Length: 367
Image 1 (cartoon, helix red, strand yellow):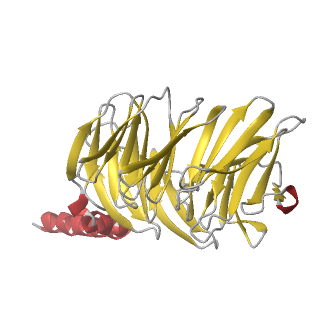
Image 2 (tube, one colour):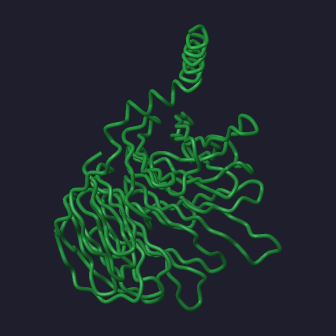
Image 3 (cartoon, one colour):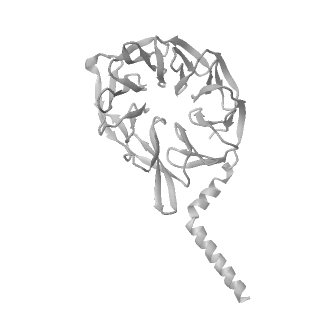
């Protein structure tokens, strides 16, 4: 009898110690228990697509002869017939621009309507659009490394910037329609040199252009304007912000533990880093950093395999689980995925999620 009591007391003691040491994980498990089963609002078949993007109104699916727009319940809102050999897209707000990769065609969508289409005299490398429908198209033409054409919301040319000795990595238009930012690289020297060029759209003369050089031989990989028209600049070394005509680093410089970095959220930089607290204790910190350097974080127990974001929400895939956190690092939902996915796409201002499989798209109820 005494042995039974001893083992019972020992079991209770060990269980109490275990629960205490894992109290945060246990609390998070029960706090998010209701989100463990994916509740889909609809499914659509997927076949031979080039690109998938998301606007405030629709999930945009582009194929070689179609552009489809879907609502959050998988209802097809529009079906445009096109002819594309490949496609690249970009979206902000309710606008989505579709460009023919290494081709000439451009289509602009707004809500459920194709508002214009055009052709470029050259081969298209990249496209972007701001929340007001102003577009930038990077393309190649004989005699120049690159050209950047700015188009109005009606599809009319505003002006074209010509690059004779540098290549354009990215180009973005501020959300007040006043500035064009171009990330450039000069690869003709012994080492590649990157710089950032800011052009006044209303006065694009050479004398009005501001140029910022990157320190430490950093190469720019992506740029994005925030809603406040501050420019997030991602390089292979760190993430900077350009505001008040000065470049400054936000967050920490990248190192060997940096696993992922992005400024695609537009208002925040996201950096995922491995954190080792001991020999068998490795976690992953998801840092969400705004343009003022204010940082929020979420700690993932295992390595993320996919991360996407839009507006206030961030989706993280870990093994067969989908986690959605907000920009403050708070876990909103945890769902179990039904199979191997290819990608994730937010739409509806970040409130709806499309889970993209090899042959279908599942639409998940609003976050």
